[in-house]
Image (cartoon, rainbow, N blue to C red):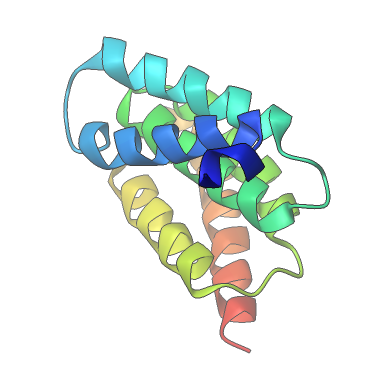
Length: 133
């Protein structure tokens, strides 16, 4: 009966979040790309008023993008997710932001993205700190 109340964004998001847990630690780029696509569809179907859902979804998209070596795209996604997270207080979001930061810490930005990665990680740290207040 719960499915009656769920919208397309919720259903895609739930499936995408479950797949995230499987593929964030793996190397199957095809499955990662499919999961990113599913989560992006969910993100755009989530109403703007559901900032927490949007922030959680975009954070997981960014994690998968880093893992699939799309750091430039991941940094864009992080910025979008952090904008959605502004003003949201959620232990789950805080935990996901910490996971994202640890994944970003392992990324090799090369000389072209080093400054941007540093700035994004600083913004991420500020957002995580705000979650604790």
